[in-house]
Image (tube, rainbow, N blue to C red):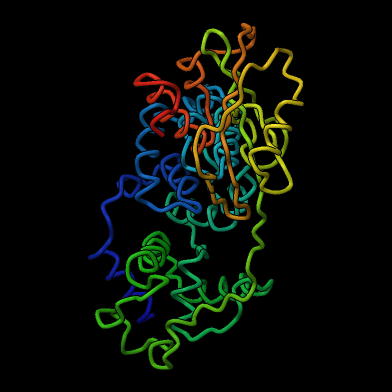
Length: 356
């Protein structure tokens, strides 16, 4: 248990002062863990404060509508987390009387809660002795013990879970799990860790074998698919625009966007003009123009979106069009939200997007 005791002592001396560590209430732990899935602490912190201010309890979150939740989540990415968060809040509040399950298996059955998140909530909120296994844990254990199993292989999770479980002090599950995560986040970082100041530099297998840079082993790489989006910002006689909700499954489900023309490849201006002119808007187009000179590349985990925004002007009044102030209240993908802010700020200063 030298490894475990040393790790916990390191944690107690070096842990960051994070708001969710000042309580063992399952709502705070659950909220933070969902937000920090695939998100850095620095990025997630403002969202955590915003959510706890808007929804102090799980009942408050449950009573909110999904669009409000998505708007607060805007910019944090992986929006299915927000939808699952809201669905689980309603289940906890309305089906469980506001009380979170206190076992690992019951927590794992909640929507949006997988093995890692269930273990984190169970151990931190309820002291259940079950280990967490995430990217940080893979890295720390593979380096310290010299484990060369490919972490993307089917057997990896079971192997690392068993190793972490063998190290877990049953009466200190919360401290140990948080120590593992914190050590991977602060000390045993993915690239260029400072091994000279590491408490394990005398016993780390990777350091002794000069394999710090090659562990953990991960052979499988996710395939990245390029997509080509042309967003059509209608500007009617009143300066209003059309927005629509993405209802299809896939990225940005239930967020809003402008009418979308997706192509199979990056088309030149002339070809795109022709495609837009054929669009059945239901009004007469008076002018079409691109709103920025370069393609905006927005990188998601498995997709790279190549985005252009086009202004489509009409002298008609479009009945379903909304003014910018109303549009900005809807939840949008952050790449669209940021573009709209720049677009309409510039429009107030000069002609539309002249200075972009």
